[in-house]
Length: 96
Length: 342
Image (cartoon, helix red, strand yellow):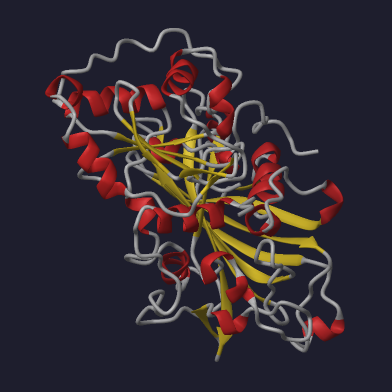
């Protein structure tokens, strides 16, 4: 596995931790498809269609910490183990 | 996951931190490796419960799965002194090794959540991609299903962040604004917006250093004051950009997918609202939408036939959630962000 792109890393880590990966057909079409003409009247609809759809990328719903020490403090206080994910030279949960 | 674990995402560079974070990783025996998905379940005290690391014939690698149930079983079998809330004391972090710590937004930074999404145009509407839309070569082989685990990641919204330094976002508010005032988007913001955040390669083939200046054939961005009151000043952003190459005639006609060239010509529209009493932006919505040609998938190099829409949104977030503080492009330690791309 040679994942050099955050996009694929995220998808794979999602699968690793047992989330249902949303590809198609789960990425269904919204009820109203936007016209590809950006204007004040289509702005909100296009913006909504670009953003993640409900259930599309469940890994984004995880309240990830970026600071291991802070995560350790929270885990210790709440009595939970840590789940650590690392990939590549950058933080794993964003773009490359 | 959320119920049973505290999830943390690390840069591989953090292993070399000389502070408490690096010490914890090394003392715990955690291995993290560049370009591999490394997963570890570990107690707050540093005891490893489970990982996806495997050793076969003397070689180590990271398998695809981690057994979270086994990790939880091991966790629950631990003595209470290692797992009860408050039983393990984690002190102050001490001095932070900034050389390898993940970049954090400087004080006053305005954070915009960014999403990219490639669409297909169908009957003059935007629809989401399917695997059949993605070509592996310019003539129509459709093989993005060969991607890792046959999962088609390209259709998904791809996240990122844009940061505006305090001096930058304050430069958007002119003294005594009047309805109808129009001015160019300040150059520093415009340059970074266009060359870093409108760069389709930034997302889809890991090109995260920003576009070279000669990749910008045109860019024009202006701000107009739309409304002024004691409570709110509303601004509108208008603009367009022409990036990369112009499509070849066969690409323009939708007959082939461009595998070796790329181009993107978005229109931009944005609505910003500023609270003059609190001196903060309360809304910062920008959308870029335009035709793109060239690869949109990594490794296997998938592309859509012809020129197809690529949309990008920018939206204000508070930064209160750690995940909203992921650096732009997931920049790790030393990558300069506020410097102009080369």
